[in-house]
Image 1 (cartoon, helix red, strand yellow):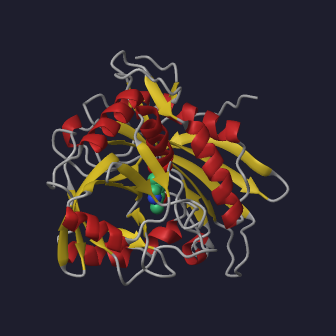
Image 2 (cartoon, helix red, strand yellow):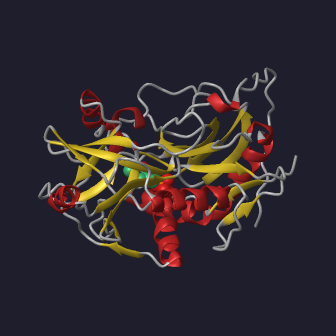
Length: 364
Ligand SMILES: *Cc1c(COP(=O)(O)O)cnc(C)c1O
């Protein structure tokens, strides 16, 4: 089944960002957005494309008080021939279903979701940037806006998709990779077993801000989270998944604890490493073993993976006031190769030998 949606065009188109090399991360939004409603008995209805503008929301809407919401993050990339492509949107659909189930939010049919993404990207396709390192960030989200203070799943929801032309998340000026410093968080936790760590929800982020703000005092860009139970094992880096290369084995936290966000980039990195013949393990890794590897010279690379930055290499860990350097503090070869391959595939400059890209047929 394929869905079509009515369009109300803006009467005030915005000027396009003047310099595509200075977009930053989500500083600009396009002219239009997608909106859809859910009502009990009716299900999802009235999908439509409207001008991107402020919403009217009743102050007693439950989401503003109890945070019943979820989101996704994906990108539309421009290829050298002018085509626009998504990357593994089937994975966003699967993750949305798991998040919705956890949050008691009504499930959105996958084909409806994808048709909505396609329709709104098509409407604002001329906003998809072309400069190196850029893409159009796509932010689908759903929230309950029933007027109610009872802590129960809402009886009305809104689904929106907003679009933002973006540069790279950790703004390296040329769009290339640089290393960052990361603070090893020993006081606060992100997610515990049985919690919402595996779900893409705002609450996980609201609770994490104290830690990232504190990390900035140590001149760190973000935090490395440790497990909640023992503060012993590495989990994630801020808004991305974490990989550690020690003695030529690449290690990332396993998903079975339910405390790790199952990143689509994470899954792609694991598959690519296997394809390259690099040993990759999903297993617990103690922070003490990472420190030891830094000291004895076997810590070769650390990098984070996520849609926003694709791959972001880490040069230093700051742990209890002490600095641990990762190899020579520079971008490692595996991180660079993964970035070049992934971003190359996404933007159509490297052959997609995994079948991950999803062209939209929107050539300029
Ligand atoms: C979205 C997200 C990631 C990365 O997932 P991708 O699908 O690779 O973008 C990692 N950790 C957290 C907490 C996230 O919210």
